Length: 261
Image (cartoon, rainbow, N blue to C red; front, side, top):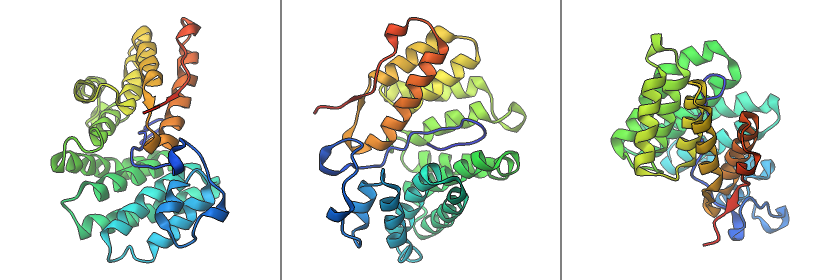
């Protein structure tokens, strides 16, 4: 999730699970301490996530892949580690994202994860960091869209829709802009759980509760991709909770389901 303000979320879409088991965490005994990719796939275990971060940190100053992957894993750590560890992790991710952008400015990964870490830090730190990073988050997301508008099912476009929703109109935001952007993403990627979740926020804020419930049901009905399971399951658990709070027909509250393909 990219976050900005109180609820600016984006489900991250760049993860793998071991052995094809969504959300599974494996025993440390079967992981190699020097295998960053294996540790990353086991990121549901926060110690594995920290191990991957340590390995990528060693070479991130001159290696693009290490830099953006460090920015990605620090986002996860910044959302799941104990509270005292979150801000340092996100600040480390911002530095890694800046390095990735410098090393390869025409690749989307660095821009996206830089925006993600900035957004998460803004959410956790309050209005001052929110204002500090507001413009930069938007510009980094727009850069991703310019490089590759379809990257990760237009995750950057969905995040930009939420940016419009969270940011006051005085500073360039607005519900109409948010809804337009999110509906555009869904017109191309109808099962985007990120866009469905964000659009539910927008229409609920506008009082269209039946439509918000319908969007959340669509999110819950979308299969969990085994490659994205930790993020998908986090997002869909939140969607189920939000759907219940909106009331209506309880039979329409679905549980997240795994992709069996």
